[in-house]
Every structure is written in C-alpha cells, then in structure tokens.
Length: 139
Image 1 (cartoon, rainbow, N blue to C red):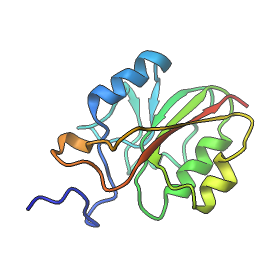
Image 2: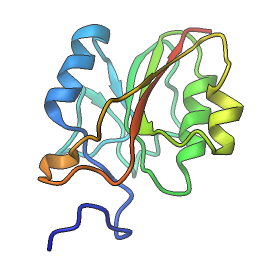
Image 3: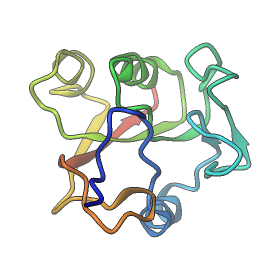
C-alpha cells in the first residue's frame, strides 16, 4: 500500500498544472522554497540558501513551504515582506497560531480555500489534508 503522507519529509511538491494556473494570474518572480529539481521560478532559494534569511521584498513570490514545525516562520516572513505579492500554498489549518496571527482578518490578505485535496508531486493519492492559497498583497 502506497501512503502519500510520510513524516520522513516535510516537502510536498506542488502539482505543475496547479502552479501554472497561479502563475498565469500572478507571473511569479521568486520561489523561496525550492531545489534544483522542483524550482518554479528562474530565481529561487534552496534549503541551503535559507529563504527565511533572504529578502522577498518587491517580488511576486510563490511559496510552498516545508509543512513541518517551521511553517509558521514562513507565513510570518510572507506577511512581513515589503512590496510585491506573496502567494502561499499551505495546509488549511485554521486552528493554528500562525493562521490567526498572520492571516485571519488581515486587510492585505486574501484566502482561497481549495475544493478537494491536491495530489502533490505526481502522487496517485490525494493529500491527507485540505489546502488553501493565501495571498499577501503589498505593504
């Protein structure tokens, strides 16, 4: 039995067709959570580059962060970047501290809950959690 979710990794590779739809709308310039194999933009940061430590200011960012314990730091980074737009693909976990602190009821934030569940990284199985798109606009 092939189970999609595993605690061995916190990386969930964005489905390419899903990304393309968003890219058509936003024309992304930076992917701060990538590796050479899955980078979505010409400009990208790897784990070794540490996208949390580098500037996202004035970029149109697509961010599908690691879904582990550090996810709140990525959401905070997106909420605090200056200028541009930051679009995040994250689990729809509305009970989390980061959701209430950086996303919920914020003026510059749009939330799009996804119908159904995504199939990450070409998997045949859907993710074991719902997802949402969070859009942080300028500042």
